[in-house]
Structure formats: structure tokens, C-alpha cells
Amino acid sequence: MFRGFYSVASGMIAQQRRTEMLSNNMANANTPGFKADQSTLRAFPEMLLQRMDKLDIPTEKGLNLPITKTVGAINTGVYMQEVIPKFIQGDIHETNQKTDIALIDIDIPVNQETGLRGSVFYSVQNPDGQVRYTRNGDFTLDGSGFLTTASGLYVLDEQGNPIQLSSDQFVVDEYGQITGQNGETARIGIGYADNPQRLIKEGDGLFRTEDGAELENAFNAQGVQFKLQQGFLERSNVDVSRTMTDMLTAFRAFEANQKILQAYDKSMDKAANEIGRL
Image (tube, rainbow, N blue to C red; front, side):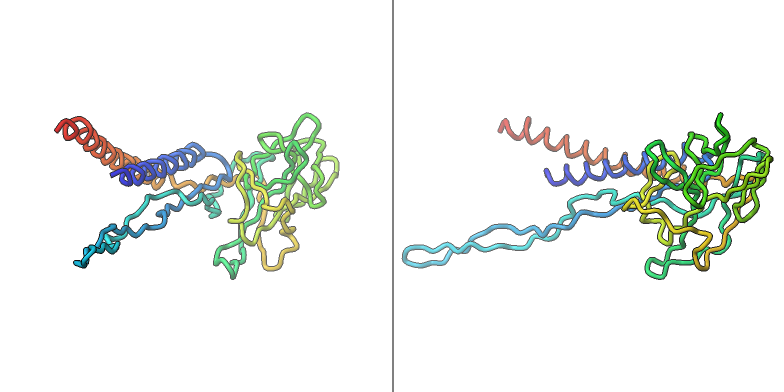
């Protein structure tokens, strides 16, 4: 009986966490470059139940031998094993804003070990001076003329330096080369991850590597083809219809577990208050 409480409770917790993940995806459906999360549910290891019994042997002194009888396996519940971003490219749409730059995949190699396609990212610098990576090309110029993300992080060039321009009237070619109004030039830093699933998601569309090392320069990576397009943005890759369907499914699963928990609670109430009186 008590095992049932634990199994049902674990199912409710797993569905609650899945609903929170899907809600976050829905909330970022219009965030440029956002990569939707996807989850995997996994059962805890099964337990083999056995019943303790004894065997009476008719001897002069009487002999009892302890034996066990197999009852069967029981599942101990479910949990949300991991949350993995889906790195499929979102739709590209035109904004006609000079500071909007879309990163477009053309031919990205497939990792032979994982069977997953790699991905390219803009290199940005957080307030602590550490390099982070993003697909959000919704840039702007701050008061000092530095090219920054919408949240104020510096966009870096190939050498890892912030990019400073004289005005927002600059031109970016498909190879990432920026030419400012007064002739200043820079090349936007693009990192390449052959296995993006190993990147750690930090929030605000940012990713970092596990060991803190910088990603390979995508312009020098063999077989990696991509381009930058000024005046365009990459949309979120959240499928709104599918996300709504998954949220309803998770809610129904949570509700079903809740009803089972209520049934267990009623059974325990009868055992304690009715059978206990006899």
C-alpha cells in the first residue's frame, strides 16, 4: 500500500516538472533563437518481491526451515531523467533592422558517435568576462558603440574582443565581416559545437561548455557551412501546437495520478478508522 503512495507521488512530481518545462517553452515561443527543451521520463529500477515463509518438518523436536516465495516484480515509480534542448534551426524572418543578424545553417556535419548534427553559435561575453554562446541575433549598440545582445552582453569578434562601431549604419556580409560607417572592420566570432547536447543551458538563451573551454572557431571548422544574414532573425523553434498538446497530456497524467493517490488515501482512512475499531 505504501509503495503505491511513493509510485504515484513520483509520477505527479515528474509530470509537474514536465509541465514547467513545457510552460517555459511556450513562454519563449516568440524569443529569437530560443531552443525548445525536450524531456525524457524513465522508471526507477524494478524491485523483486518475495514472501517470507517457513517449512515445518515433522521431526521429534520440530524443525522449521525459513523459505522465500517469489511474488513478482514491482515498479518503484518514474522520474524526469534529463532536459535536452532541441537544436533544430527556427524559421528565418525579415525585420529590416541593421542590428538584427540571423545565423543560418547550410551544411552542418553529423557527429558520427552520437548521430546528432552539430550547431554554430554567436560568441558573447557575460558580466564576469566569461564566454557564452547564443543563437539570438537580436543585437543592439550600447551608449559606447559596442555591439551587444538585447540583455547587454558584448558580442565578440574572432579574437574574443568586443566589437565597437561608430554608428548602427554598418554592413554585415554572409561571412560575418562587419564594415562600419567610418571604415572600421571586425568579424563576428562564431563557435562550433560538434555535439551541442554537451552544452549547458544557463537561461536567457545562453549556453556554456562543461569545462569552460571555448568552442572551435566555426569559420575554420572542416565541413561546416553557414552564413549570416543582416536584417533577419531566427525565430524560436518551439512548435506551439505540439507544446499545447504535450501540456494537456502531462496535465491529464498528473490528474490520473492524483485520483489514484486519493483512492489510496481513502483505503488508508478505512483501514485506520473502520477496520481498526473491530
